[in-house]
Length: 66
Image (cartoon, rainbow, N blue to C red; front, side, top):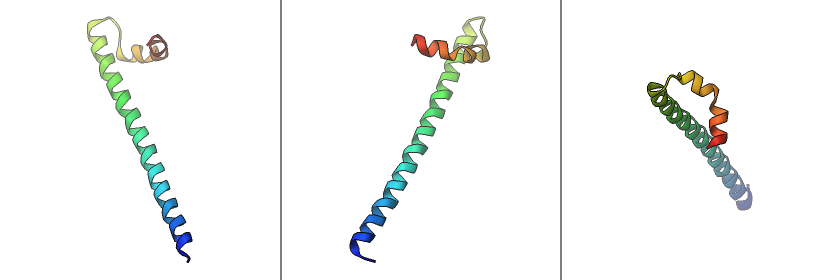
């Protein structure tokens, strides 16, 4: 195996590792965002006549307003 070939393979492995890390990070961030929204909806539900599930049903509308 030539040095250039080895460099290419190493770069490829690191790029795959980085891609995996980025996807994993995006999934974690999305889950954390959903948890934070759920907590906010729970707080809103406590002081209104709405339910958390009812607030989630209208999430799309709330996102557009924001």
